[in-house]
Length: 162
Image 1 (tube, helix red, strand yellow):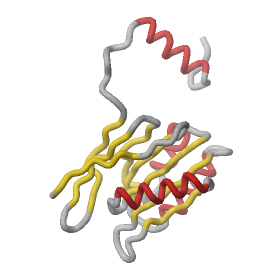
Image 2: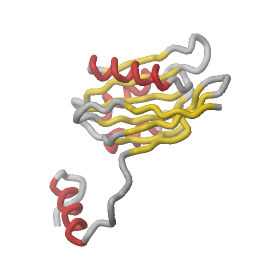
Image 3: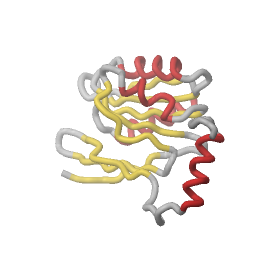
Image 4: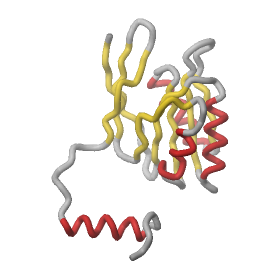
């Protein structure tokens, strides 16, 4: 078995979701989930088929993000994995619906950070072993930073104003 690290390409103002699924209809189901969850969302997604013709299946409503997802999925090459690039929304807006998709087995990550996937390769194929999402923490937040965090969440509408 060999391990390698795949650095996920992260364009500016883009979030990514990486997960595992198990069925050819995933690409269309995820498309429907995304367009039905957030009006105006822009995205591209791709799914690595793990049997039959073993193709990368892709969908999306943004040409650039669809191409990026297809190329990233092909480069990762891990069977039954999917990658979704999003603009105009955040993973928090769609993760619940994605997790409820019957063929989705799990989510490895959802982030706007620099992202690396740890991939294992055997004689049969590849699988994602884990992720490195962002950087090592520098310190524990101060009381002022706690206040800033709470103000930020209220300013962007994720928490009620005081």
